[in-house]
Length: 247
Image (cartoon, rainbow, N blue to C red):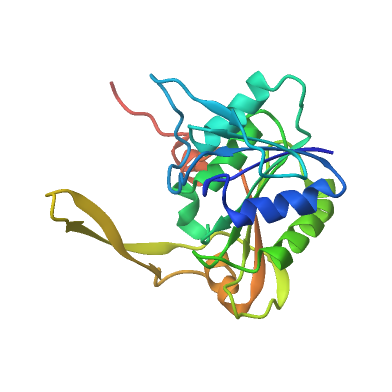
């Protein structure tokens, strides 16, 4: 297969490099990734300024390029400019830090996968719970197996959001599950320059389901959630379909 690999941690990330080597063993891989960290950029695109593209020669297993844009830019640019490479699937990751529950709304990694879905291509977003270095060798082996196993169940509208447990937590099983919900305890700290920096912590919502990704990841499960980009609230739409608002 032709596999486009990208991320939001930047092209120097070990999570991306190790996964590239594993995928390139039996596939034709092209890496197009940001030239630096673009975490929490969501689905933003670079507008009103040029995007720089540079060949990256540090990966020996495949062709690689760094760009000055966002993860979504990486995918869009590949489909429009790399005419000699038509991806069969798009893989994003492995991200340093989980993308569970409501995290997906902020994640550049998941948004890169959604950009692939816009082009009608199967997409996989892989994330590790730890925000630092992780067992990317092991997780990359699982990622290759999960791609092979999920491809027969995949169409161009699905984004597979897959998370690996924290360092030191033994992997117990692979679980298909729904998204959970986090509460973001945000704090803005003013620095010496008078600017503000967002810090804080993340905690589970009180009503989070036991069988959601947020809970299962703590039990050592690899969580697998199929996502779609249509955010229509169909329950509410059915409820109001017979209503009429006077104008």
